[in-house]
Image 1 (tube, helix red, strand yellow):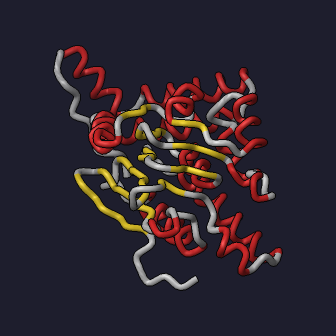
Image 2 (spheres, rainbow, N blue to C red):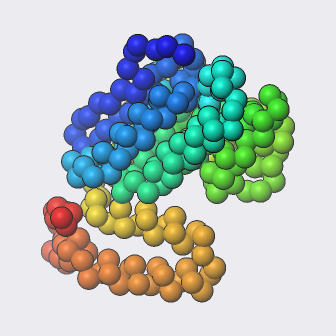
Length: 264
């Protein structure tokens, strides 16, 4: 598929990087090139301390992201091509989890299959009232096996299985109730709500958010005793750090903390 336009737009403002999936004519579906661009960009962001928060959004009016580009997939259904495609997608989802910065999904329109996975892979999500979510691959004979990983780590088993087995849409309020998104707001308030959430994150020490995010995802995969042992060490190291030193002083002096820059 030939495309000349910039598939991933990157804009920055006051510590927030906005990544816009820019294939509105294809419902912002994840082509191979777009996945490559996302992978490269996230790698650069991970090493850039100027970036404090990342927001992922979709261009156009109809979709956040409609998942993989099925037309492109049909052009080369060899094992090698499909393995490379899904490997790349999984790498992007893992990169979002491993990114030191918090990631917010700004969701409007539809988020289907790997697009729903993308929402689930972000740390936080704000949706407009008309947003709809589905793991719809089963309707086309392709069970959403990789989206299942992120989805099942966001919502309970029974609703996850229903979404995966039926491919049916759930509306924004249902997604909120299930825990797939954090906020649902009218469409004209979506940017304001995303900006407000980002501002709350910018107000916190970047190194502590990075430490907490890393620990959160690691402990999820542990047994109870192992999780407590791991997080005990994490919180001890956190308490010995410069950010808590400043936070404690600010508390005792009844002032706002002035967070130190993250360590090199």
